[in-house]
Length: 349
Ligand SMILES: Cc1ncc(COP(=O)(O)O)c(C=O)c1O
Image (cartoon, helix red, strand yellow):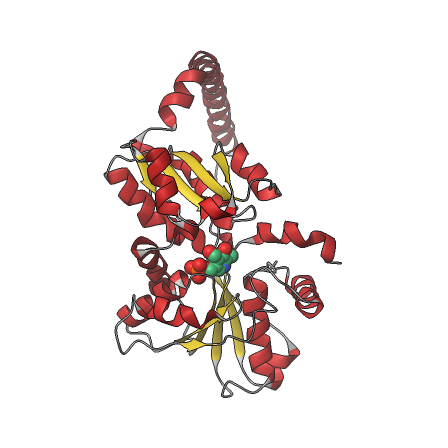
């Protein structure tokens, strides 16, 4: 297209002029903003954080990525991972799904003080501390053990969570602890250890509707079984035929089967593999730690030794044992929890 140069020159100089006006306006705006910032810091802290406009939900990102490995080629299966660990750096994995309806419920019943429970390395405590800061709640945690510390608790403190270190005997009765400290506080909201309960199941069920690929098998790690129950429920409600394989991370975990079942319809099925606990909750063995290091180095995806490492080990192991028919598509759910790695770093590498 022909464009007379002089006209172009003219247009450019007008544009230049407009740009400099704009930049003048922007700098005035900037000046106003910094003045506003200077005078309103206290205001911002006390109103922005507690504004209901700042409330749920937030947009989540959890892509499904294919993993490549010669074993998968040999056994003619495809393996994918759903990156719930990418939902948020601290409210990661199943944590946002488990907290979401707990927080919506707290918000709608005007309870602005979240009171919850967990161990020194609890991913749930970290997620609750961060979510509380993000959405303007106050947060308190009863931490199991009187003389404990961890990197996780350091971050909880940074997010403004109050920590109450509690002897193991007292810690056993959480309802009583809550009653004796906060029974008279109408703004206090009890959130069970790990966020477990109906609300958490409801949040985890939403994962099924997000699935983009066609999978015959899904895998998920289980502590209380809440996340697994939610996913099975979600699959069933969405009419998806995929089978969830539950990998309990604790020893002697058969008691989880009725715990999971209580949220389900009679004909909802799942597979339960109770031989990948590596000695029990938070226990590891050199083979597991080596698997986690190799996996991280070959995929760029971190796993934690308490939950996702055991779950992913089970996926590889079962493929090696010809458990799946050729042509199967398998999806492992990355439930986050990577801070658990920091507690084991001296034993790895
Ligand atoms: C990283 C991670 N994955 C899986 C789980 C197991 O979740 P659930 O207790 O719902 O079985 C947890 C515990 O909450 C966890 O922190």
